[in-house]
Image (cartoon, rainbow, N blue to C red; front, side, top):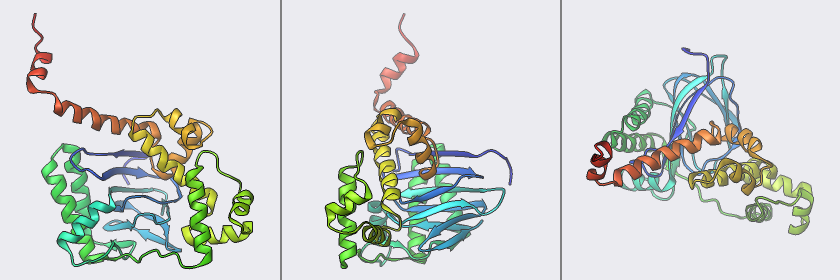
Length: 297
């Protein structure tokens, strides 16, 4: 694999609302258990991406896609010493649902069936979306995105099952999650949380793992990173965002952010600011720019 240093860019393109984009070459990067609010459509170019999904290890190599539905626990690591290189698009559930309703026969909440899907053409489409976004070609980026999502839904899509809360354990886990969301920056201990819910500590731990695929403390870190992303998107400084969501300091946020998002929070926010600056520039009347370029003497 060409190159030896890890590189990653996580950004947004203003003409693709509701979509995050990533290009990366990871070698020693390890993604801990986490979830995404958006879909993950990762097109592998080189190497092997190994990720735990659905209770089993999945291997995605060149010509294949790693596909993860929203709010689905997964991990990530390299499958060899050279790491892996890929491009990823993260479309929002609303966008995927709109595309599914217009172009497929899927009814209900759409999602991907198999987490690893071999389709070199779809892989090329994902990379072409990223290339068009980098070039500022809005028409191509939007068109290729919709073609890629439609193709993957038609070939590997279905209706996601409704997550109905039926068992007593699932209800307890949902209540515990609500408490942690409300007290993100100052959560109770496992014992105090269990006492508040009227169950034993180990019963709560088992119920939470069964419902969300990870223990409460791991879920809490994932939720804090999600909240930090929203603050960073809104312009909050990384150090302030870290404290606001319950991390000790910015280095604490940096460590967990990189192991879930794939880039440091500072780099993540700079890309957001670049998009906002470009959007602001588009709103400036052309005459103003002419005056700036040719100030009157």
